Length: 194
Image (cartoon, rainbow, N blue to C red; front, side, top):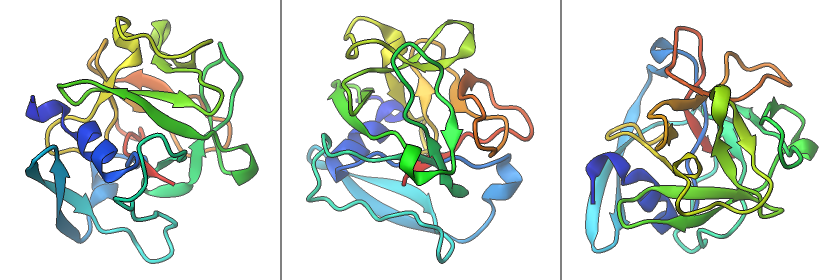
């Protein structure tokens, strides 16, 4: 299994998706802890940022199955999560919890790449023109835009297999669009389960 694609397998094995965004690297500074998580039969060391008190980030229980629903939220602004949007539309973020989208891991391959669907069974896809959208229908195994992974050593990033760029927003503002691009200064590209 490629190291650069293990994170979603790690998360699926742990029972959830660790995804939450943060601004540029400077905002990532802080205490860190090393956690050991199992992928298959091999323990993997994952460096995790310690969540500030009251951040709202939940620990992922190993008893939860990958199909259990979760929210995808910005790591350093955990009240901003992917919104429930109808199929065919670009994803946005919201700070209104009643509008959070529910997601689950629908498929993970042998390389650790994963597909993510919403509660209605529609795929989270890296689409054309750099938009992240909710596709009408489930994820397709042969569509690389439907596959996501985290780069080695960066478990909070979600990278498109098709485009090799990150899911991100240009700030944490209610209604901001979600893109897949190479992060620039000021972009929020770290995600965690909310």
